[in-house]
Length: 117
Image (tube, rainbow, N blue to C red; front, side, top):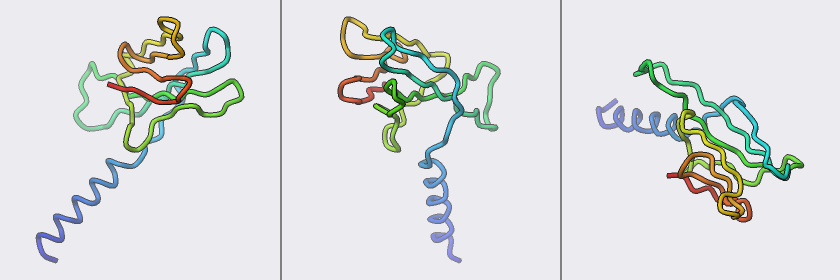
């Protein structure tokens, strides 16, 4: 096998493993003040390599209605992951139909769109 083919194979394998959607374990569930919605926080495992003592696990959120139907969840292209230390839930901030899950990342409940920075 030529070096170029080996290089391409390594690149494709790395892309495959970096793009797959890693599933987390349910960390905690937060209900809205009016009990119409629930925000599920999922924790991802820390990778074995390059850990430091102060590492916080990565997490993501899924917004569901009271029947359990998913309103908003991360996609392959928009993972919306954050450090679990940054978790800060705030429902209906400024009387808008928005739930913040970090200080700057939020979900628009009406449209189901996730804005993560």
